[in-house]
Image (cartoon, rainbow, N blue to C red; front, side, top):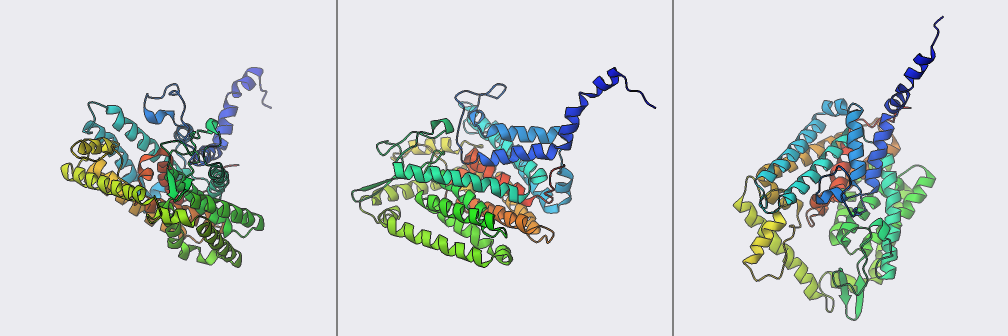
Length: 463
């Protein structure tokens, strides 16, 4: 009989936490991933840079903390799931293209347009993209099940929708500064408004810095909640109906035309995959959404006319918005012609645009071009554009492979379809706006959810 001495027992105690961590490593990584996705609609930034973080703009964002936690936990725990990702031809191609794009982004800081005067511009953009890319790879290796991801996004969408509706009702902020809400009202001179005759509409901001970015987060949540609409469980279906209705109404209230188009195309392009899951209850929800759209059209018809530039007093505002976008598109093409291979460096296009403006009579400030592919081309050159396109192509092939997998359960398939629809919608939005390329929250949504959608094996966490 073996006798255990007190010293032996005491000596085994330090191993117990490590044993627990090893046993629950996937749960820990999943918690970090879901916490990150939950913070997609939150712009909150700390007032000072956290300890050990570099003194760069990106370091202050709250969403950075769970992202870094997730990446660190994945590395410490032996990169679970990497072997499965490497076995997938398309997943392996996506990972390689994304990591090469990250390296190219960091390299671009060496020749960036403002590398001497403001080197932190390129450094913060490169660091931001690098963290997002690594997080996306972790999602592709060790993502939670799709149904858990869409559940997180759907619940957050409901909260985001309530804040949006409340801001519209209040014609301004709700006083949620602790959550990062910008303080604004109808008298603020920097806000985005619509005018129709004597009527004024203050577009909601949610917890984001612009109504269009808010619309992007709502779009993600609404498409995620659609997975519950085609759920076989009655309780989940009812929750999905409520969230899609609330989130869809909030999305309409943002008056973001790009998000409206994107959510429609994202749903339509994935409809063939979802057709076997669609039931009479799902068709009933589609009818409800149609009624919500009709109610919105009737209630806000003057502002809809103003949004397309035919309302009284709004034509100049809308024409100015369109002309500004055309100007920056022209600047992007000029920048690409100047530096077709290397680009002006990641994050540096607004600075290059500001120098173009100096030689014109335009009353503008440097800004991003409202097109993600042109942004990538202008900042990272043809090399960067090719890598972005390769990453998107490989992702589409990998996600298509997952959608054809017959071993996926009904609930997970519905979630997988929703994630694929979100990926498509964010690409569509990127044809009209820049935030999927420039904002860390929307970069995380684009590449992170894409990685989760193409993950070849979403195993349950170890028990």
